[in-house]
Image 1 (spheres, rainbow, N blue to C red):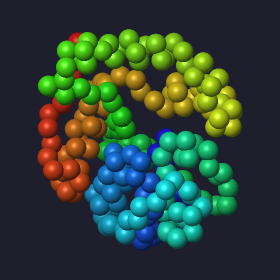
Image 2: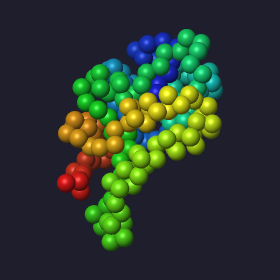
Image 3: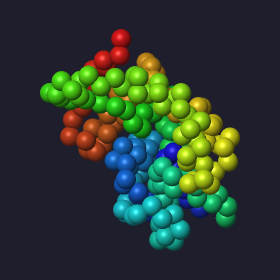
Length: 186
């Protein structure tokens, strides 16, 4: 989960605390502001401590477990970054994917990523059993997150979203160039 929280609408934000534990998400929030909201706030790097982030900034980018578990009270506005991306582009967003370099070793090339994904999906209830007490979230919320919020395949719409993300990241100077990705899925 990748969220931006603020006390008000994003158009009133002037400073954003950025948890940079995900370079993809840090670039995405910059793209959202620059490309779609039409302005750029001041960016400040922080450890993922929402209370501290918001005590010193108008908004905060939080990622992963901290985004799933913070207390949603006190009148905070919460913006899901994947939802914002879809609203502005009509496309899905790819936060993570398995990749392998062209010059990877034979052993690396023999990894069956599809089988690993399938195994994880068949063990989803075990994964939920493990993480539920650690995160303190209700089981149905974790089930929805794993089964409805995450896509485990790259379709044409997700590929188009990924291509647009790279194009915009390059346009805004967040990456040096765009390299084509080759899929090994048949």
